[in-house]
Amino acid sequence: MSLSISVQKSSKRTNIKHNNREMSEKEKAKNPHIDYERSNENKYFVKQDLKELYRDEFGDALETYNAKQKRNDRKIENYYEHIKASKKLRYSKS
Image 1: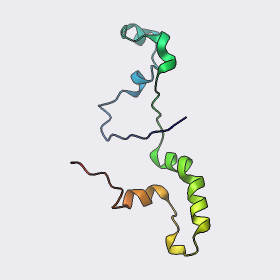
Image 2: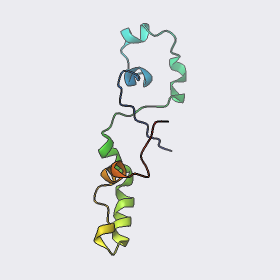
Image 3: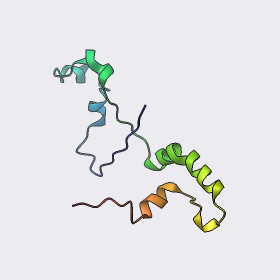
Image 4: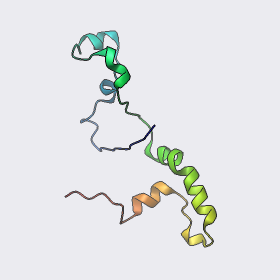
């Protein structure tokens, strides 16, 4: 299974509950355009803290990387903060 991470600052643009089809019967009745027989084809959004996600996804690789480093100044303590501070990996709006 592949994983893709996408983040938007505005919560008004995405309705995770609707997109994951986590609705009550009353809410389902209000959305007759949804074909529930095709639910097995859905892509699911996950609500998870981004820092926790980075630990889960990159934690083992970070430990391996740090174990190979002989100089302490090259070790990365927190990969999320490392990426956040990186000038090369920054997202820029065109």
